[in-house]
Every structure is written in C-alpha cells, then in structure tokens.
Image 1 (cartoon, rainbow, N blue to C red):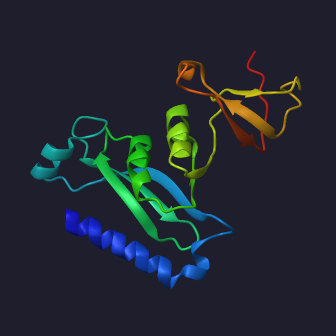
Image 2: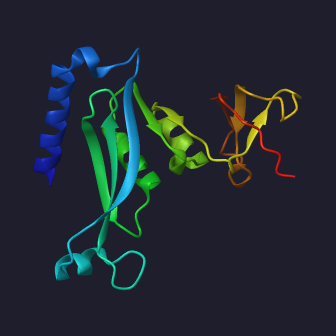
Image 3: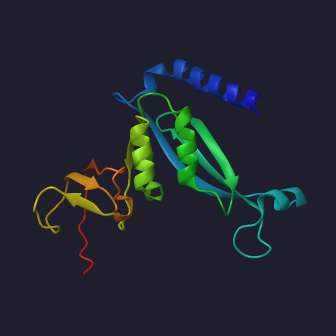
Amino acid sequence: MPVLRTLAAAIRRRVEAVFADRWKVGNFIPLGCDGTRQACPRSEELEKRLGTFGKEGSAPMVWNTAIVHLTLGFPYCWRLGKGGKASERSHLLYMLRWLPAAAMIVADAGYVGYELAATMMASDVFFLIRMSSNATFYTESDEPLEEFQEGIVHYWPRHSRTPENRRFAVGCCGFTAIDTR
C-alpha cells in the first residue's frame, strides 16, 4: 500500500495548490471528521474478514472515518475498520499524522474525550468539538451553573486526574445548563 499512500499525499498537495485561495478560512484549514458504518455485499470473503454487526445473519459492515475539507468537500484522508469493532476516535488519532499545519478539526460529540483532546493539543491540531451532556467542566468563577452561558472552562475528567495529566482550559459557547439534581 505504500504506492497508494504516496499517491494520496500527492493528490492532497495538488488540491491544496489548485484551490489555494479557498484552502484556508482565516488562519485555519477547516476539516470535518465523522464516521459511519457501511453495509457491504454478502460475500463469503467479506463475511470472513469483516464479520457481521448487530443481529445474526446481518450483512458484513465496514466502518469509514473520514476527514473532509469543509469548504471544498474534498475527502482529505480516511481510515477503514471492521464495522462492529472500529473506533472513530482511534481512527482520528491515527490520521493526525497526515494533517497539515493549521488544520482545525470540526467534529461531533462522538469525539469527546480527554485523551483525544490532549493528543490533538500536543500535536498542534486545533479543534472544535461539540461536547456531550455528560462531559464535566469546571469554571474559575463562582457564577451559578444556571447563569453560566459562555467563557473559559477547564476540562479535566475525574478518571484523567493523575499527576501526568493536566487540566486544560477550553472555550465554551452556547452553553445550556441542565440541573440534573
């Protein structure tokens, strides 16, 4: 597969050159990331290699996680895995090596996680991720939760509180407080 990887890298460079005026938005290269399962034909080979997902007798499935340039609609890179066992977060972690400088990943709540965010920060990748309602944030102010709308918050989930893991500040906007008491 080294030939295909070389070809993909060459195509990415060419698209960047041809569409240079639309490659960046401000100082960032806007890239969206998401994953999906895709049904495959029912062949003996695919059933053996991919297995099935869900109910007995279901079609073989492949998981496709793709990073797409948001203004061009160009598939920048992708990673495939077995439909029932793949992880879009681990796929994104793997694909970080292919991202250009100034990349900004935009993703949904399926990409929430301290380890993923810390790795992207360590890799100098900017990101905008919709956080899920079960993510916990800490503010520096004594502002009541019901009144907090936006600002700097700290993300440091309880399971990640170890000496080698540090909390990090993130911007929060459009926050809706939900009292779960």
